[in-house]
Length: 425
Image (cartoon, rainbow, N blue to C red):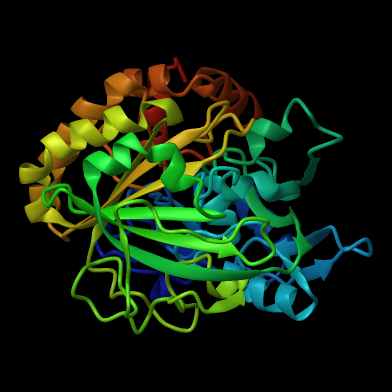
């Protein structure tokens, strides 16, 4: 298929990155995609463009898989669904719900593409909920030779944990099989004015209060708002974190912003896909006029992380829209930020001023990296290659694997080369 520079996406969703690709392609078949990969010197895939760094960029060929044939096929045993990688979670959720099925969890935004969210280790929240990539049971990708390669959790136990959260370095994912379960209802309530020191002291109790829990703060006011998303089929009724007050009107995560785009609150039950995300699929949550970064720490260090960020509060708050705290269960995926440890995630939604935000990211990392922080691969961070190699236990193994499967670095770019350089990759 000929390149289409006229339709090259000019920038990512946030607008802080302008793509440098020479050519843009939107193949309509796997055969076209395979031919493109075979002929390319360097090629990367772009999804919903929600990465805040240059992970999806390339100076060669940029490919969207959104034009590939649509796949959404529920297995006969109703325990999994096969989907095309370019689909967005909102599209999948709607059809699953119509069939009485659900995914275990969703991210804050349902607008993101499945392949992109999986490849970067994106997650929702919940003490027992793993990242979104842990739902993947099998996948297909076009490898560096242009061949379609199938991988399965059961059939490929050695390679599969490396190939799911793979940053696009092993190939272009065309389809994925996701675990599903019976549909469920969720009731969401917002609890206001919880003291940060109380949140830290009662962290386990607060985050065990519901199926999915998030806390929002600006780190300077000493208070947090807690979003609890309670499964109505749970044995225990929902409760309020001690010291917090249930909101009487719908809330936006950013105080003072109208909540019209947020999912329904006030304890009103609704389907899983219309409560687990913070924002409704039918609405764009913002114009993208923001920057984001995020770090995952060992769960047991949550209180220390809160204390260190509270100390930075006067510096951080003027450049923050809001910060979110979530929990993520451990998994076995090599590059997952929650690899083999239950984690607490500290997320930062910054103002759209990179020069202003960059030194604050460094300050956050100086506070959190000594605690074992791992960055979210699709957000902004400034960790050196050696710091990444220390924080991510299987990064060197992944670099070796990537060199073996793609010796010419076809799926690499400048950013990936830098991230892997601390491992000898």
